[in-house]
Length: 137
Image (cartoon, rainbow, N blue to C red):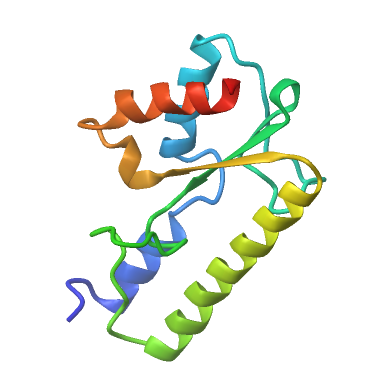
């Protein structure tokens, strides 16, 4: 059962931003401090990647675990209400993501995905240093 009323849940969901959110901000600040220069939300590339590093021909997507159905992650739980809507929505997101990744790779881009759960304080430093190594190789 949902802990919130429909009105509160609707308000909470309306506050979730698709770009310039906290996880993106964490990754961008870290990369900038490490000397990487990038463009953000490039609409001309499939999927409008969150971070584009043209020098390295690399794109980075910072994905929310719920919205992009992160496998084996405790942050992704199938909603128990309005199941038909959420099933269609989330499976559609996943299929769209797979298509965008394939298109980018066909265009010669290296695609890196950083999950929201990988940016929690306990594991953030390790994941961000791995990200730098992934970009540079």
